[in-house]
Image (cartoon, rainbow, N blue to C red; front, side):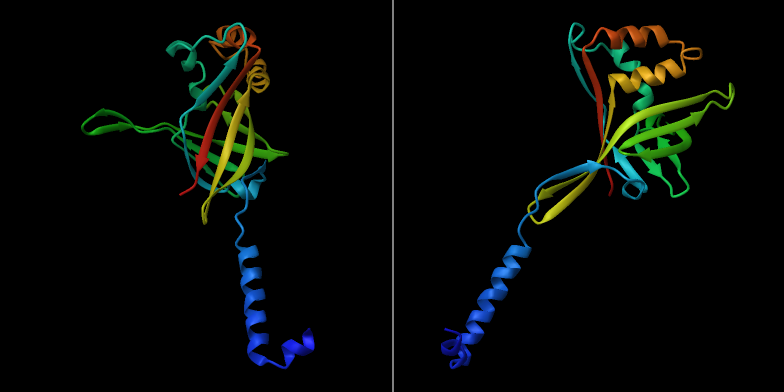
Length: 197
């Protein structure tokens, strides 16, 4: 067959174009959604944070009250900025107090990210007590046609919340209330999505 193709240059060109188009189409094949534990290089930069999403199951799986949701306000954020020197800044969403006044809260600290576990460490300026927040951090790529959207999925599990509480039980005024709330539930998780624009 090759001899037959080579005797006709036009036919050879058509076969080559057909192969090139086939290879191009294979290269353009849509990649599926992927998710893996994040590494530090994945999270550097500034990310916009979604609101908190709560998942709960078990005896205390009734809808959360506003007061119960307030127990987890420390996880709320407008943006996160992760720097190369392992420092981070968490900025709250703008809170408008009046036509001329907007309140913004900044949290500064250091972070460690290993095997998909993110540890945010802050220190209270007055009491000098250290607080660690433990989160599961996954790097996700979602295909949308010819575009890919990159996000960071942060999750805080019941066990991670209890670990944080145990470390700060002497200084956390709502320690017992939060602990009781978590122990009532067989399953509890807080989800938050970070998007980089």
